[in-house]
View (cartoon, rainbow, N blue to C red):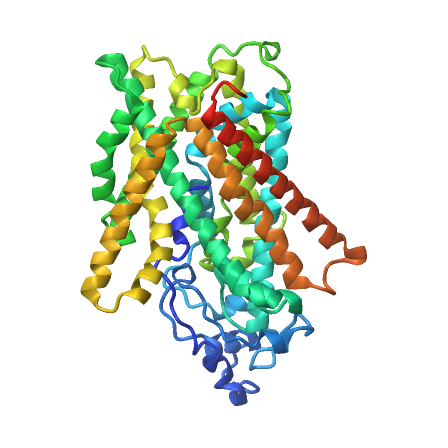
Length: 505
């Protein structure tokens, strides 16, 4: 997951305290519209909120009326007497088509994670990696569906058009079991904290990735320097790039990065599929001690849950997002197949000598291979600012609360931007091991956002009488949470052990 998460919290919190007034103001006129419009269309016109920003640009500050909604039927009525449907009340300046959403979904999931999949297969073995990656993709996709379903349920209860990831968590706890309601704010803060950790972790990975690929190219043609030297050379350009505050200025950069990524991946496949050895040349399975490293890298690659709600909220036809043949399933099947193919053929091609990024294994004597390294390094360099936008947007809310003049806020924001870039540089310089950094970020933060919080939110949202016969939904969610917690614990421990002693595992 990586390149589309800046949709979350792009412009910080925007108040919607008047959200329900438009929904209630014309109730008396709803019964007879006299215009020949069907009820759903008339409801859409009456209840359209006076907002002019896309849902991904706001955090919904809905009224705190969840206590009175506990125990009601899910078919919550709107002011017109019809069941409230959130998608009918969204005002979108530029809604996305199904194809647009699919492209964004694919782009957001294809980044440094896919290039690290052969290294993940090295820690799992060829066949364990093959089936494990498909299983991981299925579980992560199911968790994405959980989050969307919970968002729809809570939007109906609150009668608001859309919610962000953090809002879904907060509203779920506020309307959940009485003993958990006091923790709603804590849960929201945890979501935002892990979003910041995840995105800054991605930024650290990007720093190391660009430096490692530049080192390979320059060492081949000129001289060899330590990776930390290249990290230092990248620091000033990274700082300058991330002084850009407006996302619209990053759009051309994002387009360039996408084109470079597609070209680089195509060339990488060309090299991977040449002269493949027999499957007996690599191990079919690995040791138990190495599996946590596989988990961390795989969940890092699949952690695209942060962009799911912004994408669905901004669709022209959001009803096409879910379902067996919907946009989400179709896109994630493509993503899972791509990850599996790169991991399988990359590990089969290079065996245990595979590196943290498959681009580092391409033949150094060939000009095209060196060009691929440069293209991927540039693509990831430009993508850094997109990843950086999310934590900066979250932190900027707190900056504006504590500083009261526009000048002090501006200075505070720029100082924070520079400090965060320097912080990611320091972390990258401390751990210039690309594979270990990816596995650590995946185990610590990606597992929390992708595997632990979604089932917890589903349990709290539908507690106690909507968890299926014999509470099968509850047991399923608990199993996924246990899987995520075990991956978090063992993945973090093994990744840290590898960082401290690379020869240990």
